[in-house]
Image 1 (spheres, rainbow, N blue to C red):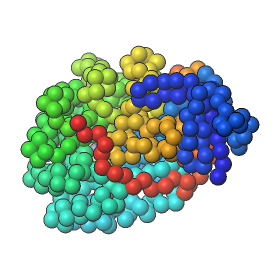
Image 2: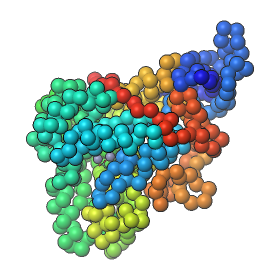
Image 3: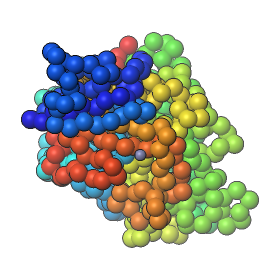
Image 4: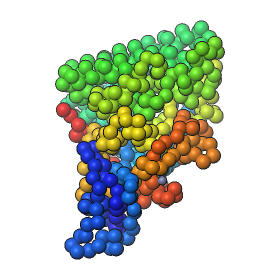
Length: 481
Ligand code: URP
Ligand code: ZN
Ligand code: ZN
Ligand code: ZN
């Protein structure tokens, strides 16, 4: 067991900050001390194996990205990051835990889908990982199997109101699954978009010759998100099941979540960096363009879609994060290359695999909210680490710098700089042939990344290895009001 001391930095939690030294023994944090403290008469810096000087830098709990899709079979292809490449990129960006989605499809047993995900991940992950369960086919078997999820370390599951014929559950299935969730204390995660109505709109647009990526966003109108969010909230209310709405992008959906919370309901919302920074017109390029944008826009085809800046959705997401109407920022990391993957939908936006890759950049992108004054430093830590830990039953072990917690620590340099992208001199470790964030310039830099006491990144070098990451058996959510 080796010892590590992180000295001179400003330790930031969700509730405050202070100058402190962090002492690590083996995989655990054992003390958070006044700067320069001795321990039982011993000079710490002289007694530990490794000293990391964090003077002038922030020392924060490792990021937790609670929404990723590694190797997801989707849209006629498979998400391009493996557990190894995806968690490597996560580590580079200061994320030391991920929660991926194991998939059960219609007619398949949950146990089978879950076993497949364990096979993908075991021995391959560079950082710790847990699973949510996607239930793509709610039937008597999957309802029964929900009873065993908690024993498997899975306290949350995802249903889809979108993607008819693929993952979608109808209202009857949602109601039954939520009743079961309420009984078991499981957290229902919802992809809230009205899939059948979207499919009609998409077909009509296609029939009018509107086939470019831009029209993916047009078909997935905000009304489709607001309606489904409202319906999910009502079903959750009826069943007294807590509800977590994933990848919220419409301001009207935030308003639905806020209204439910104002009624005292256990309804939570997650947004993603793409909905804070990017927009339908800028990325999918249609404004004033008679060709309605070109195929480059496929890079940003995701669901829910990027929305119009003129309508103020991005500002509403930032505001939601400030007011706690939205509690979390995950990436919904679901990468596809342009070549052979996104290109499947050239000439028909409906066939473009849905998803954006962001896992590497979430901590940096969210730190920009601190730089611009949208959120506080403490809120940055809360959104990216502490709340994900509490929401998904990991808090205490993860999400905090305190004695007894796993030594998952990031040294973040506010005076550093990061250029994102695949271009020369930029950073990009995700298995994609493009970056959705090409050319983004970040004030700040992930300097050192420690996972369970092991230094994964330092001095711009990678020291991580596949197999270091452990499976995280999660408990029940610790976030209910
Ligand atoms: O476009 C997206 N979001 N792809 C990933 C699957 C999902 O719905 O989360
Ligand atoms: Zn989704
Ligand atoms: Zn997703
Ligand atoms: Zn640096």
